[in-house]
Length: 452
Image 1: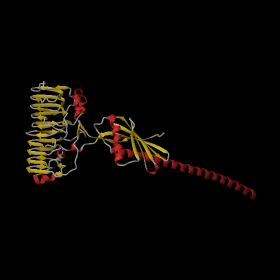
Image 2: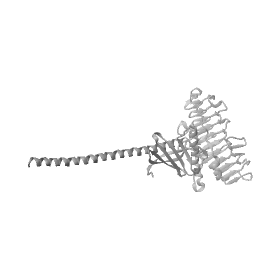
Image 3: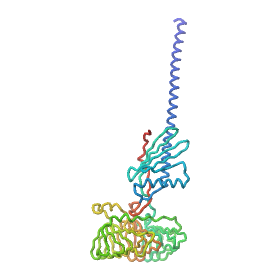
Image 4: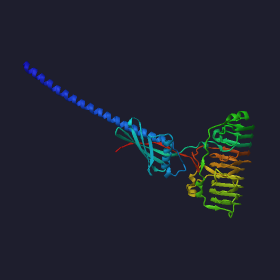
């Protein structure tokens, strides 16, 4: 091949390669531009997703600052939450977050860093849970995250004690406050704000757990062969008595929840002596009955005030006792006395008792009424709460819950009073008490949903 032809062929090949490389360059340039755009879009999308997640956490935080009472009806929970969050936002001068109740949902909105923002809508699909859709906006891009919460009752620390009393406690003789599974179930909590003589033990008394007293100026009297927190003797036992501890609110009573079950009237015309049987009774005010002999009671005993009700002889009760008294205004005209041997069990037959079997954890809920125990009660299926307590003679039993005294007057234990407390497997809030309802995060509800 002549030189001229060879040079022409090389030039042609070079032009072909140049064209190919130019095409590749243009292609790579376009691809790089596309990748940059994709990366930019991912950046914006991730920013919007981060805004949604951050907005959800903001909502979650402010909801946690506004607990509601367990007594609030399910249909009123969202509106109550809205009012609570609004109150907290105002109290903390928060202006970048807002909440509004629309009648069926909570609407949240807020601004975040770097120009991001969020909106959120919380609805309540059923009485036990909520669903929250949070949409994050970042530079015009939107992403939505769905989360959920379950309503739950926050445990009240008072129910961790064996005995909790507004007023002082006096133990004389051979009194015992014991934990069944561990000594801590026999702990004692005392407020005693108006009386510095907050706690006394005289004789052969025992408290298996610690004694905590809110009053910083509380006077403690320990004499005899006593034991507290495993230590014996007055000097060693004193190390297990703590004064000036943080105050705790005694749980709010809602005894009225038992009132609808009491359908059988007991008044001055009702025979209550001898071998008698009653089911779901309402004791009318001023009746002052005395149940004697072999008495069997099934379901609810609801006592109107004023009343002095005495259970003597052999009482068998498969149910619970409640009153309409005022915990803020106890009266000597309101008393409940257990003077004989009492057998107590919980109602468990749903065919017989209906949904009463779900109202567990409470045996005696008597705000405004004092209670006296002079006999053995065996095993008590729930908490005992009243406004004044006297335990004498050979009283005692095993309580599946706590004993709570709402009265400022001293709670006294004299004689061979042996009370053991079992807290294993208890619900966080016994029936007839209201507590704080909280929202527990449901991690299984998380989802990233399409945003229109």
